[in-house]
Amino acid sequence: MIGRSDHLPTAPRPGDAVPPASEEVEVRIPARPLVFALALGVVLVIAAGLLGQLGPLLIPGFFHPEFSAGTNLYGEYNVPSAYNALLFLLATLLLWLTGRVARRRGDPFARTWTGLAGLSLFLTLDEYFALHDKLGAPIRELLGVGGVLYYAWVIPYGLLVLVVALLLVRFLRHLPPGLRTALLLAGGLYVMGALGLELFEARIEAGAGEAGLDRAAQVSMALLIGAEELLEMSALVLLIAALLGHLRRTAPGLALRLRLSGPDQ
Image 1 (cartoon, rainbow, N blue to C red):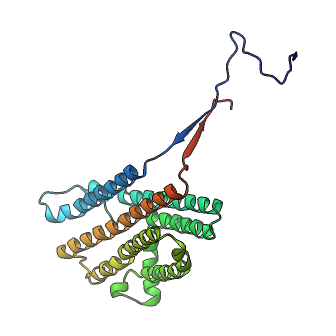
Image 2 (tube, rainbow, N blue to C red):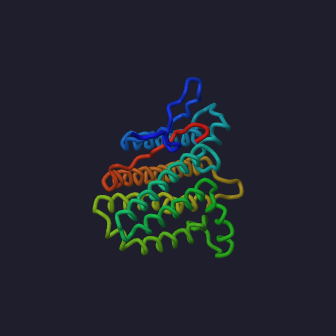
């Protein structure tokens, strides 16, 4: 016969407060709907940005300065910059999770995934606060460049791309072919938009006189910026889709678990 022990739970008496039990909630986000929603967001952001910039130039009577400023694809602290930063943040999180999973699986390139997450976080801050644009004038004056290099920040960032590409050669060879192709395509699209089209935009900007860009140049600039942002955002969506697919294959049980508990727990 077992006697009463202070260590054993006793049944609550009538009127006693019952402490709320903690509950664990598992959250799973389907990959395909998420990628589709992100891609749709890209289309809407680009379309709104082009309308906001081309509307005053091509549509008679179109004058909505607040809309144009809020959707400006080349602006700061507005809808496009926030959405681009959101894509970068999601990519950063997935790269970090991939690194954690790779470490548990004994992958020798686990630190490379984590390093890519750090690089993605830097680019997130750079994109939202337009840090690279603030480097253009000082570097241009220092090096005395112009023309296609009028946006002189492309010089250090181009060197950064080359260094990162060289450091990732062994890492890319280690990856499965499908994932490697997706990462190379995403990287190529992003560099083509962020650096390649910037050279054409810089040439137009450098050729502007004291009166600024004429109407034709403004239209060309708006179209180039729209294409640039489309390439960059599409590259990020492709990267996110590739990482989600990789995580689904390497960590099929991965899920976000939230523990809900009472106020005193």
